[in-house]
Image (tube, rainbow, N blue to C red; front, top):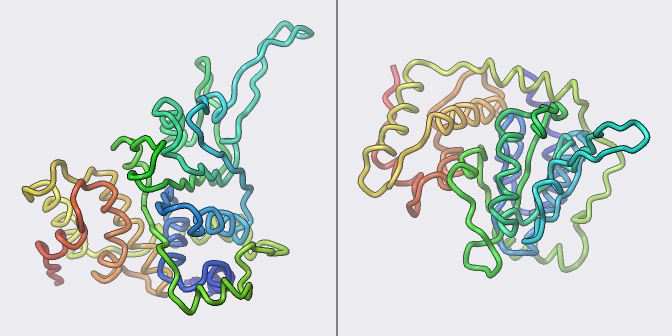
Length: 298
């Protein structure tokens, strides 16, 4: 296990995002598990700063896409133009061709533009005019969105939400952390001279996460949570198989960060809210699932 090698990344991120150690750890779980991340908060809470910091410490290429109501799908994926000199079409890649794409204020883009991300998030490629173009590896979308109550937002459809492994909320900082922000004693603007890990490190860590053991009893517990979401009357629709895969992968990453080679019930419980609350149309969805399902370990 090489989870201790991730400690410098956590330390650096915690110096940028003050007082949000749990959110930072869950964001790293999402990165290690290979899932996309949705950050939801009002403006000015540090969503963009966290996204940029994650890309920098991991040594990944980073591009920011500012979503507005007039943004077109071609502004995301790219487009083909006809060249007079060669009499052929040439593909001009859009900002999506990067390792980390920050889709800032995604729910301010129109539904048509939002849908331009669906294929990329699921299959790691973009198809234009019948030709598929592979995206860089790894490809990680970090999207931010404003609360639905704010004007000028379009609700993300269920098919889009389900492609995000986690939804995290930073929330307001505690008084001590906010005092440091007001005094200017944090590194919130992030001036990291160099990445704290290599691409090879990240790929190796992801492989280790994939091999974290999940016992039969833990698999039964995970399945019980999925089926509870599909049978409890307060949920209009249950968790998809993709959500189950995300929950297991996130729990494996949490176990890896804890220096263990196997998943515990606590790992599932600690990532559950981040994985399911944006997928289930009910308040406190994770808490309701946990209260209805008790892990039985053999």
